Structure formats: structure tokens, C-alpha cells
Length: 171
Ligand code: ATP
Ligand code: MG
Image (cartoon, rainbow, N blue to C red):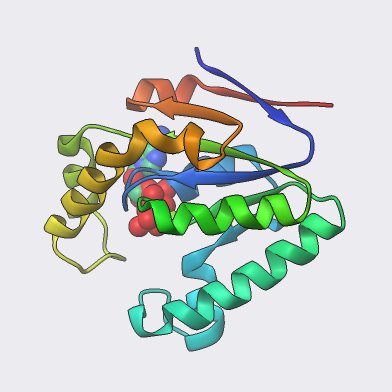
């Protein structure tokens, strides 16, 4: 099993296409208050967690809260797709601004798994092609994560790897 030894004070980026299991993984391994989800912030600012039009305000708010948490020395998990280098760079910069280690947990599951999960979800009404685009963008840029500034990069590639992974915090 993959052992994720997280620094006690870290900015943890959960990275993966829609339906890769980011929110499920976060709920299983972290406190609800440690997890800042872009969808939750979309809902907070617009009453609609799927509202793309609310993206800029949602991320402004998410970054504001993340910054406050990191200043207070609280481990913080960012639950957003973060499949594009530009999106991830903002997370690395935020961590650096607060002298906190940025680490990445990547959920890179097979396309067939993502598509089957997406088809079964009532809460995601966009076409499956969106997920394939996200997955492709992630795979195209995955090798660069270390260079982007993430101090640890863990990649989970199957449901079994995700379900058996252990998360520890090391001082
Ligand atoms: P989004 O980016 O759209 O919010 P997500 O990455 O947060 O997606 P989840 O909501 O965690 O994905 O998971 C999507 C669906 O996949 C869930 O409804 C659940 O049915 C299934 N799923 C998630 N994790 C697992 C898992 N470890 N094993 C089996 N099924 C899973
Ligand atoms: Mg989610």
C-alpha cells in the first residue's frame, strides 16, 4: 500500500479530474474543516456548486480562507481539480507565502473508471468529454509537479491504490 507521510503543516493539493474521488478521499482522511473545496465555495458565493460563472469569486474566497488557516499553522487541503499548471502554481505560491510545504496527492484513475462513475452521478450534469479533457491535461503535465514546487508528489492510479493508501502526519 502507498503510505502518504504528510508534513504536519502542509498545503495538500488533491489533484484529479472530476469523479476521480477527491472529495471522497478528503472526507475519509481529513477533518471537514481542513478541506476547502472549490465546489463548496461556489455554493457559498452563488448557491450553486456547479456554477462556472462563480468560479473567480469562489477561488478568491477559498484562497482567502486558505491563507488565514496557513497563517494559523493549520494543515489545509485544497479539493479542486487543479489539472492545469496555472491552477497549481497559485497553490504553490500560496504555500510559499506562508512558509508551508506544498504537497500533491494525485488521483489518476483509468478513463473507464472515471466515465462509469460520472455516468452514475446525479450531481454532475456536464458531458463526459469534460472529464476526458481534464484527465488528458493532467497526464500531459503530471511529470512536472516536482518542478512546479510540490515537495512530495504521490500518484494513486487505481481504486485499490486509493482505497488502501494510508495517510500519516509526520512532525
Ligand atoms: P468532482 O471534481 O466532480 O467534485 P471528485 O473528484 O470530488 O469529483 P468524488 O465526488 O469523491 O469525486 O467521487 C465521485 C464518485 O466516485 C462518488 O460518487 C463515488 O460513487 C465514486 N467514488 C469515489 N471514490 C471512490 C472509491 N475510492 N472507490 C469507489 N468509488 C468511489
Ligand atoms: Mg468533489
